[in-house]
Image (tube, rainbow, N blue to C red; front, side, top):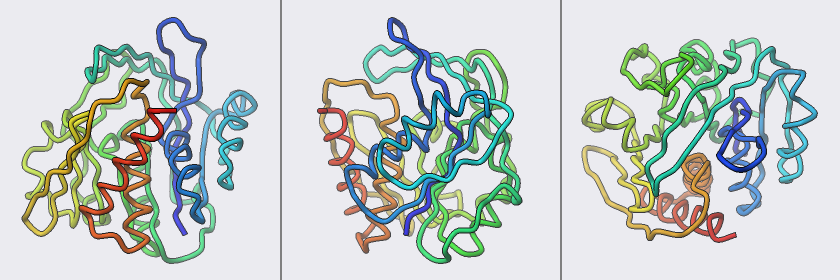
Length: 253
């Protein structure tokens, strides 16, 4: 069984009403397509629960809500694959005691929106019973309001507990050579150009094609789809190809 954990967010885009976002939501969109046994653990401020949670529940995967005191909020604008992003509010940090009981085995994908959300102790607690995948936002996004800032001021101890690390191009640029991170599998996504999988000191490029559509959450959907593929027995490159196809199907909707 796949477990997907992360804060929900309020996303603000030009010309449209505020909408639900966050890795737990966009990953759930992929799970709706893949129809595999999974559980989602999502968090936001109690005041925002009635606005955000139903949109997640409607996607069909069972959801466990963790009460919170704040909701991450972001404003976006796009120029093709290029995204400009500002942090309007930060979400809650997850402590080990915030984690619900989950069946042992399988994979857990952690979808942080900022570095402070999943500290080392929480990731280690998950890794005791599952293989853990982490979105690189949880390493390089500084927990500061204003224009999004990326840096490498994370605790490297967290890498010991990660099986798969998913990075966007801009996150990989901050961290440097993916083969030196000490993580078993690193997947770097290049937007509409595809992705590169790094395993065992080797790399393989997985091509993609540009598709007209709102790309918000595409990386989250890719990461979740990749873990579903790995859980099903796909090799890393095969899982990345399948994830590419799932994201393409979402963008075409």
